[in-house]
Image (cartoon, rainbow, N blue to C red; front, side):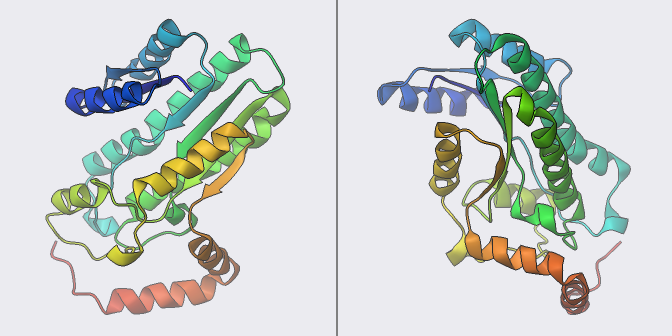
Length: 246
């Protein structure tokens, strides 16, 4: 697979591209901020200029911030929804339109969006993040049904806690205060687990949900089946936490 990487930090991009090229792959990169106007289209144009038509897109930009709902400012909510959801949806729409217009064959392309296991539950103290991931999940499912007969596959990826910078950034943005339900450190997955699941789906493209932990998937399915019990457990846990400062 030819690869184009897009992110804000040029040094990280250069390192990743060098690793791919050293292993015999073809890769290039482009520095951008997905929330900027026209940036997603610039990414698509750059990719096509480098390697021809676009076949697969993985939308992965996102971050979390911990607050109770009454503590979020409008600016915080606007920024996290713009980054995690609106920019992702724009990339998915632009990519699908490109694939339908330019790619032949029964499978015209594959769109993947990095949702989360928490897309299936409104997580106390983390509602903005879980809400954006739920929107990705809902729009991804709708697009999956809408585009299936036209040859574009749409998948949503639902990792559990993964050993990346994500949690450090959450702590920084939340002033070090972490009270939401979290994956214990010993159970966190490596990035390779998530990456391998994505590559496996790309090798045999079909739309659907990509999960990296069956136990978590089963637990969240049960929580949907018994919402009253889930609410009772979440309320009980919330009462055990200190009252937040406002």
